[in-house]
Picture (cartoon, helix red, strand yellow):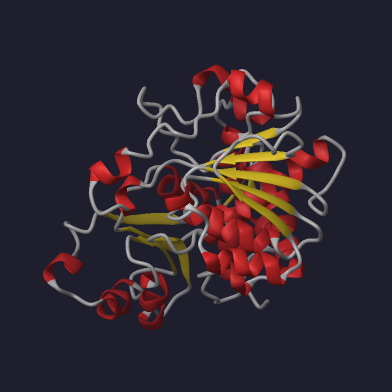
Length: 337
């Protein structure tokens, strides 16, 4: 894949070679993310961070990644405060805002909207999530996390068993991650959800076409040899009414008791965040916080590395980063992580 000047809209753009290249650049970003060094390779560059749907981690992660490369960030949050609420088209918004930016990240509640926006943009656009469709950067950071976690236990992605649990219908993160994992060999999937929230047929077909085995079930039993358990929240914002979402809330919980009963001792626990910690949901219990296999915060940290890599690649500076290094002159305990 030719990254410089490219839009990052879908995981379908990647092959294994391009994924490996992204991961290689991400590894090189660790000294900057840990504040061991700093770089000004994007000094003067501007990121347009356009989030027309609620977000905390992804929005701040993109902004942090760009700042760590020396760039500046301009943000728009919420549909109601944007010109889109006045009837402006995505094309017009893109034509205008791309003249103010060098790269744009965008989240929008409608599937396909980021690709539509990109048609009018004069700068690279990175998809930060479009409805229930895709979330390519989350999928990349999830895959990067899976590879690192499994390597710690002495094995790789080929031949692994992943259990995905929760809202698999509207959870765009599992859609994108499944398509990336389909590129590997002999991956086994256990897909646990209410029947009404099952993984879309299009994703199942992609897994089947790639020769992977999957089990669709409503029961946790049968996933005891999983290498990864990937929990998702009920995507309330995708339902017609809050009441419709409420009937599924809290049905697929993971806590220490369930983990010990149904998973092997080194099964890695993942979640794209935010986890719903309200008592009626409590999908990923706080009693797992001290479990060394809980990787959710390592996932979030890895997101900064992946997004730094994508910015460097799309703006063509991946081989210049260390030429603009400077010393870090403030205290930071991240250096010892």
